[in-house]
Length: 377
Length: 120
Image (cartoon, helix red, strand yellow):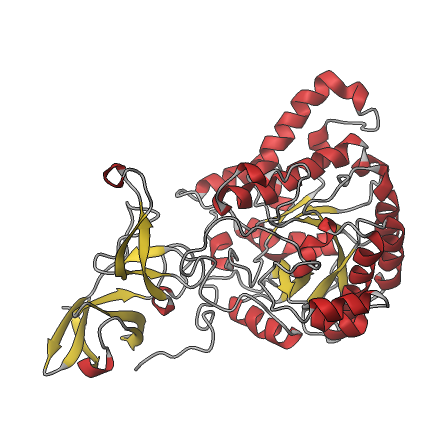
């Protein structure tokens, strides 16, 4: 009678998925250790990985590799979840996604969420290239619903563009990941134009994704806070806000009209706020953004937004209202962030009281358009 | 009429331990807190995580009475969901983060050295 479970997901499948819907999850995480990347990394950086891999690994906080440095607030028992927080193989991911009721998952890295904090451009670029080789070799080799986002090293847009063109034809490469944690300059800078050119040319979407780290660049002034409560809210949400504003400043969505831009891991509540603020400001300051041919909100309505970490008002009707404020019915995509501490189960998205059609869009339809997924991919 | 289920001998649930049982089609956590038995559904209010598979702990509180100093309290009385670390008071089922909400509690009795749960 005692229930012994292999995983905390067992028996927790979604309760009421709409019939026939293929659930697409635009944000799941593979655990790329320094050791795993060694055979994929060019010299001399392979030597560095060999040294780094000798130190005991801390979760998402590895000196010289993933320098989060967010260890200034004290931990409490089980804070961060009392379960496995990493997925180390594609087969493990497939099993987990099956238990979550997810058909297709798009893999992002764990440690390379902090790639943009690395200051040595050659080193960061080598890590990105090693990750892309590892990802395509070890995670995207089978037709099992596991898709991947290749990482574009922000430190070196020319190599990033070459990587995009190299992997664009890969059957299971579905997106380009733009490391957004502590990125400097922000993603609207013309320095990054080669990335957007390659993305538009190859028809791969870009996905901005941040994480919490202590680093003295805007908007990551996390030294102002004493708790992860505050730091975590600011680091994800304001990173997306700052980068969206930056993209508008140089007219990226106007200059690359076919580029699909997605924002991950910040929920959706910030989108109407930003949209309305930008429109208000633009009416006075249009001359600063002469690249745009319409109100900023027009461009926001063409962008895509991942749900996780989904807002959880007591009255979930409010979520339907938020969606309606920015056309989220056709642009919001389910994301679980599995297996991270704040992952969302599909059940939470199913609690938003919207029509069956909108539910289908959010669970998979919008992501299929964003990722340009073919049927039965 | 609530149905009564025999779940385990008392010897299998020493003080300070808890286990999850399949009872009448539900997952129910049974806790031995200082010799008192409590039973809660293993379903978190938050995202329906397997609450009772989580760890039992104390927790941190601060109030005017403690001079707003964080204080460690109620060791062994709090269960923490393994999915997202939401805390629940084992004796009452009260959710610490949302004090207006609680999960049900089930009546536990011991008859002939066996733990029984009444499930409505």
